[in-house]
Length: 311
Length: 289
Image 1: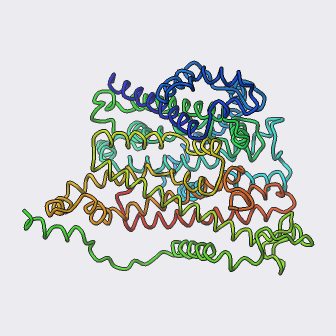
Image 2: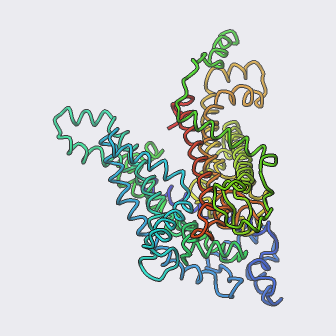
Image 3: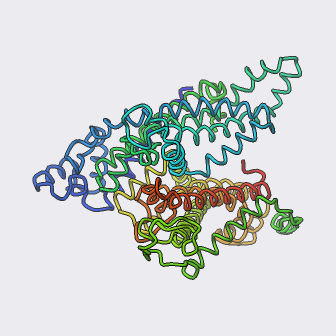
């Protein structure tokens, strides 16, 4: 168990280090970071202060380590546009994004899980076919197309719901639906195939053969085993809570982190982009860790024989 | 030793002759659609009725279905069908280019990892884990913020997408092939590693790699059109399917066809490739999920 936890934490640390390395390499390849982060109009003494703060006058390998140091101290640069610390700009957008992604996550899990389980238990039935069709659609219809079609139907043609902005809870309905429908379909498909695989296992036959009632066998044998692959997908969805709405926020002019990122990329406001990149990496890593620990809880094999069962 | 291995080698090398399968109607339609799209992309210059930027100011926001403009015109009187054809070409070019790059890079890294093992293999696996765990859209946006968007940058960037899948597959299959008789036999005959990997192992795992390409290809189309929709991918005056949707969004109330035509092209194309991929997977490689 200790080995299991330590190996997962090591992997998380490596991932964060790789993201920071990625940001460092890209930043160095694209020109003078001081100019890039502080903007071309910054006064020379500010640039000099920035260069010495970030150690840009040092050899490259020392710069690499001081870059780590600066990020560890939370020095993420300032926005080119209004000079405010990038981290502030990003943090104040998070509640807006969560207002979309949390209900969407609830919708994905609330619809996707039961639909997937039901489809697997009634394989070949009408619900199963519906789930499979929607799952394919959820993959092939990009979110901006789905969002615009929803706007076309519910805002333009029917006039029921607003097409964009963030003035009331009604403005959130279409973006949440756009995020939720596709995700629910994907989760349903994964849950279905996980359930089908478990249902075909010998231990299910054994349980039924020794007289365990069908619903008990499902509840206490099939569901816990099918939970393991399903948790992976849900964990990935949790990891995209902050960054998963980039396109949808743009479709609905919703002022969240994703919209901020798109505007920052268009304006080449690098400090903000870098800050969001690191924040997203941190979220992904945290949710991956959470999933790994959940695995340990769900699958006793991982706790006792970590080496044998981990992969 | 050589005598023992030699009869085994051609047997596992040559696939048994397969019966020609009957192609399901859906798959046939998907193939027809894809061939149609490729022909349209290749002949784009010859078959566009109007120039991509040619304006017909008398016929602005014309409805689809009229004789001059089958799919109508946009706000500037540009022919939607012509722009659609040009967009299909750019989007398919990016998707093909990117898929080939990532398949090449991924397979190469996978083979190198299988051949060299040790630290290099660990590094490739670590990078693959990293790539799979980060949302690619965010990484792509970060790169575009630093370098700006141009067609080569975009193809190169999309070419990074999905490499880790080929790397994992080719590494795993190359390692298991190395333990099978045929690869050992050829090594004993004195073939160089490059020859073993390219002439003997690659043909044996090609079907699995091709199936993976059909999975990555539609995702690249969706990624590129997403970026272009946001205005951060293909830049005007060039146009891609995502650009057209992004532009058509402004005229959603008055001229929804501007946005619906490219949307339909994206959806049907990705659907057709997925369908073809599913069918190929069932036919060629029952072991892949």
